[in-house]
Image 1 (cartoon, one colour):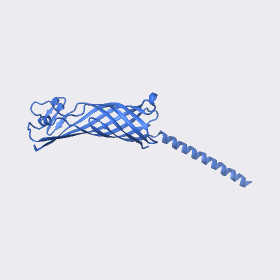
Image 2 (cartoon, rainbow, N blue to C red; image 1 turned 135 degrees about the vertical axis):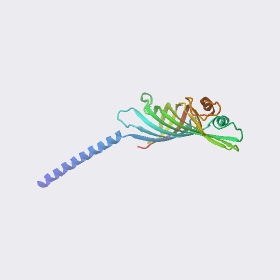
Image 3 (cartoon, helix red, strand yellow; image 1 turned 120 degrees about the horizontal axis):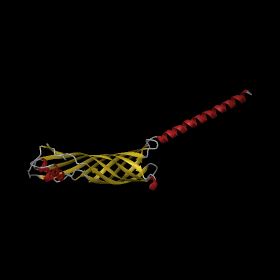
Image 4 (cartoon, rainbow, N blue to C red; image 1 turned 120 degrees about the vertical axis):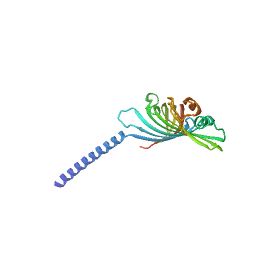
Length: 234
């Protein structure tokens, strides 16, 4: 009799432990489902020149919040501007030497992404947010002993669309396009700078900011068209 009672008690304990473990596992799974989703991506395309970009997207970081956040970093090779004008406006009126020029943009951006659910589920997103760029144009005069950079730092805003096409459980093909508008900013080169507000430091002759801006191709209104891949990290 005692053996039967002991077996019954042991069975009851086993059932209770099993139920407890099931509840714990279910809570853990639910907690995991509520955690943020992370996606990393790379893309190539055009942004005032050929560009390479990387992104980190964070979604589902707050229950019921309809937006995802995407941080982006890009590197673009660009045409920096007009070498003869740049030399006159920032250096001097010399004409010796053979000009060589190159330019680059580092751009940083934050987008808030809104899924256009009524139309396409989670495959098409509207994106918008702030932008920041670091522009550098380099001008060399071979045989003329001149090698100088013209730089600017700009803030701006941007918007566009982003489409995702699943290629597996974690990988998606990503197509995106949009426009960025960068605000006018100070142009600095050698020991000279020109600002949109009219402030000039060590200006050459009677040149103004408009002359410097016409000579240097810093970003303004720029289209962004890219194709790439995203990978589900978490």
